[in-house]
Length: 208
Image (tube, one colour):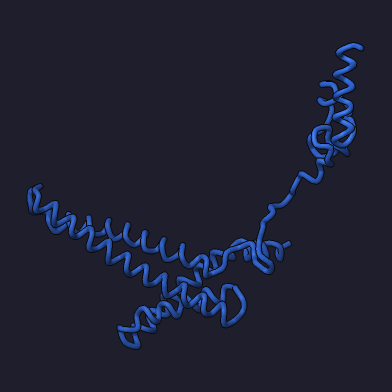
């Protein structure tokens, strides 16, 4: 018996053993197979390629979980980012103040030490302040969300207002009112920014 026939018989036997002998395709036949999911079966996987094409992202989430992170998950990012931002801004402000206070001194080690002390002091102070504001805002936001059972811009505005009031609570009633107004303005501006596309889209649709 010919070796080619023997090898063909072996291939056919193995093919029958593992799900049937699959037909061999030439390069010309394979080149004519579209890759857009229009062919009924793929000659490579023996699977309908339309099942492999996903139009939307798929997530593996627990039952009842949302695809977006809640306030509790975002609290860590908010607090950490605020501390780092405060440290950077404070360092720049400390460098400005240090150069201004030591402008009459010659470049020497005492001047460098004084500038460095000013940078570290201002950086720590700004980081502490912004970190405290972010902590209060995140705590109020999570508490209001749990109390209301909803996540919307009302939580953002309420958390911002309460954060400003509590942060300036040591400055008397005027300070509390001033802090509340500042928090209300900032949180309201943030909520307006988040909904700007929706507002402009709805207003433009009314014109037509």
